[in-house]
Length: 274
Image 1 (spheres, one colour):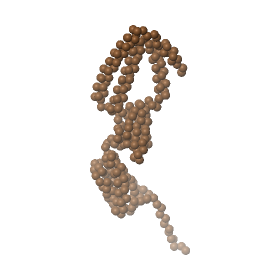
Image 2 (cartoon, one colour):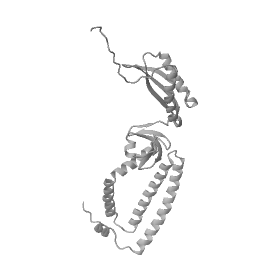
Image 3 (cartoon, one colour):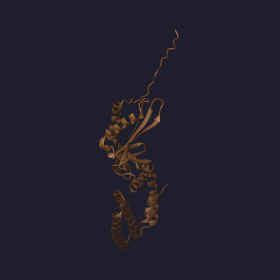
Image 4 (cartoon, one colour):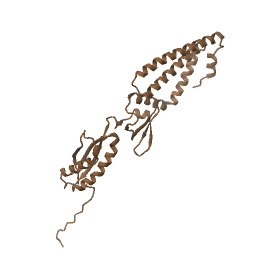
């Protein structure tokens, strides 16, 4: 698309008279006063809102930008500028910018959705798009996660807003799950006792409500599978997870329970023939 920008500007701007300049100056002064009054009203309305502080700032800046653009158009009209051509030029320019910055605008829209709906906040532990970690920063363009192993992951807000997201912090607690197997020779109650002792080894970090849950889960080909569930505060999750996992080996041994593993037994039969 070829646009004669010079021609449009030449056709739009005529000779400015002294009267037109004075009139435009007066209009500009009135616009500035009106903008300040409107922004005071906006500040009061935004201040009463319970929205995210960053979203409030972005909204205020957007309103102020729109008001100044309108003021510029009004002042240009007072100068006698042909606004039809200018608007056409701006429309073409905005179309080009929109096409060139499609991903950026998508991330911007996603950031606004995240800041307004608040599916998570800074400090929450989330899992989304195959990545999981603690939220360290939320901007209009991206969200920064810090993983358990100390890596920093930047997620585009466009993908983040449209993906399945799990927030492990929102409820204030996380569930620890350990799945393990025991020999068919081990009594069920002995296995459960060993599991309860392993959970107790984590001490007060294990929440009493919901209470720990231990059950026989399924019967395998060479072992019985058990599931151990308990709950901890979000900040204690990894401590409890590893403490219970380490204690299970010790409590199984103390209770004479065999913790099975995949192996092959070969039996040689003697049929008594020479």
